[in-house]
Image (cartoon, rainbow, N blue to C red):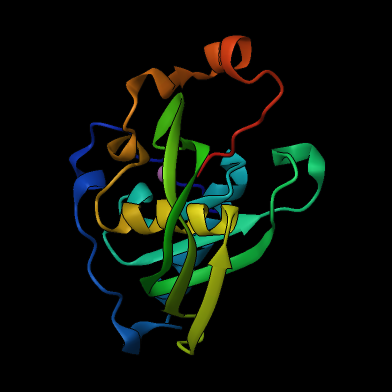
Length: 184
Ligand code: NI
């Protein structure tokens, strides 16, 4: 186990544009150490996505793991643990939908963000094999949240109505009791 501290809002490293991961180094010891750190930290935090930039590694690697079961995050689409190296994004349909997002780097807050809901993601997996993944709905939002981290952006940058930014306790009290917004 190698749980790493998650950088929080205000740390300038969260605002860096991460470097592409050297393809020739995918699969080496450092690469798998980074993956272990990401997985252990995500599991420890109970989140559904984590970018390397959030643990202070300015390289374009992120993981997403959206567990099944209606009890955790409501009736949302799931995604098995997926490793994205040097991902690229193509918007297939610009029509947006909104979700209440949370971020491990912005603890204690929820914010309503609208994003395109139909995207194509091209990336290398943990064996450096090129992959293409079409995402719709909630997983498309989650991927864009992680992709933003690799470019130094946070979900709060996308909030267009600041009345839709809330502490978790007030979110539960006033906005959507019982709705568990995931942490990414
Ligand atoms: Ni985040």
